[in-house]
Structures are given as structure tokens and as C-alpha cells.
Image 1 (cartoon, rainbow, N blue to C red):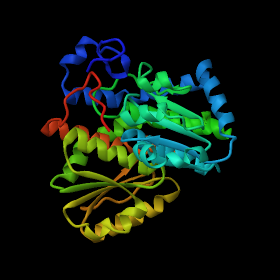
Image 2: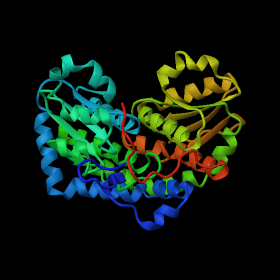
Image 3: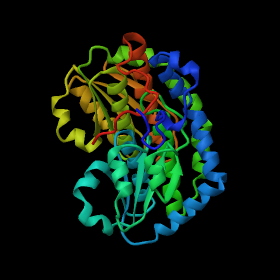
Image 4: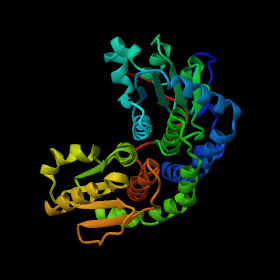
Length: 367
């Protein structure tokens, strides 16, 4: 795709890829980008603590949040998953906030755009048609942007903008999900006047080791899931955002059927068709961890297999594969949980090949 403004290549994240990336397999690129997540997260946390231009934007948005009305977090795909975590965090801090699909908000909500305090748009590319259109609309209320492409249309159209700092990503969303989610948490923290440094330090202390440990068990994860017709990822709160990106990762990279659910949504319907052909990956973390454990027991009782992701230890069985991960402050568990579907995906594409080819330029962005 050629960029209409400069008639040059529209590179991912606005950066021309190094020559060695052009010959790497999708499997190698995917693993490389997964393992870069700790480094990119650390870079973002430093920047949001020290960079004067970022701190100025955060201060401006803290003033915006004083206005009446909810704070909306809008995105699509992986960015929608990131928006969930940011919105949930503001709710936990006592500030009215909601997450919505950006396409739905664009087409169905113009009559209520002026009833919110502000809208936060999250996008990796900054070129998605729906997000570009929202940046162009006169919503009469402030619109802020979290974006990984500072050469994008959205970036040029936005007044309040914050970088995701994930670097170029040539597979599906891994680094961009991690950094978008972290940036949303930090933005939400600033908007409610809550310090975030201690919580961020806690996750950094174990983040890289947890990634290595979970990825080291990827063969075990794949073997446990082998033969499943459906893989369903289930979480509550920030864990629901992780479930969405986890399902996208499996579907996009490996081509396997996968779907995301809230815990309540899964219990009131999909649980009824669980049988031996199902695998559920349940994120039993945070304040609703016990509900996740109970759901795992009910899935097992119907013959389904469960990968149970929890900070607590659980006894394994033929139908239960417990995976103990680090306990981290809310809502940072969204970053830890996603390691499990990422690791499973890596093993699937190591064995059977990737469903996607590496992408070095943005394609045609259609609604």
C-alpha cells in the first residue's frame, strides 16, 4: 500500500523494517515479538514517568476527566481488549467509565457524543477507517488517542495523543496489546490522580520470568488441547480483555477456532454445550478468581477440559491443567494472563505452520 500523502511505502508503525526481518519466518517473527514484550513494557513505563511531552498530555487529560459524564475507551480487535482493561481500572478507582467497540460508537452514537466527558481511542496502526473517521468528527467533547504509529492519519488529526511505544509489529498483536493495555492503565491512573509506580514495579519484577516459564510449557499446553473442536477463553474484568486478545491470537496466527467470553456470559449459555470436544482457558485471577475456579469445576463435570490460569496452586487431573502465574495488582493481570494463549499459539504454529504471513506495510483499511 502506498501512502497518499508522500506516495511512499506505508510501513508498519511508520518504520522501514530491517533487512533481516524480510527473510524470517512468521513463526520466528511471532516468537521474537512475544519475547520483546518485557523490554517494550519497561520502555513505556520509563517514558510515561519521565518524558515531559507525555507528562504534559497526561496532565491535560487529568483536567479533562474533571468534567461530568463518563470516560469512554474505544477500540477494535486487540485495541478493544486494551480498552476493557483501562475502563475497568477507572471503574475500580471510582470514576464512571465504559468500553465500547469503536465501529459501533461511530455509527450508532452520534446523538449522544456530547454526553460523555471524553473519548479515548486506542489503535495500533492509527489507520483503521473507523478510528480515522472518529478523529475527523466534531464530537464537541475532547478526544484523546493512544497510538503506535506517529506517522498515521489518526496521529495527525488528534490534539491529545499518547504513544504506545511498542515498536513495529509484523505478526498479530502481542507487543502492541501489552503496551496499549499498560498505557491505558497509566492514563486512567493519571485521570483519577492515583499513583501507579509501585504497581508497575511489582509486575516488572516477575514479568519476564513469568513469560519464560509459561512459554517453556507450550508443548504441554498444546498436547492438552490436542483434538479440541473449540477453544474458549474466559475472564472477568481485565481478564476479559485478555480473553479477547488470546482468542484473536489463536484464530489469526494458528487458524484454530477460538472465542472469548466473560465468566457470566459463558455460564449463562455456552456452558450448556460443553463436552469432551471443548477446551476452556479460564483466567481465575483478581477479585473474581474463585468464580473462575467454580466455572472450571463445572466445565470438568460436563466432560470439558480446562486450562486454569491462577495465582493459586490447584491439583492437576486428566481434565484440568492448572497453570500458576504471578500474583500482580489489579488490573495488571491482563498482561500476565495473555502469555498462556500466546504460548499455545507459538506451539501450534511451530507444529503446523502459521496461518498468517508477515506484514510489513499497512493494507487497505476498510470498515
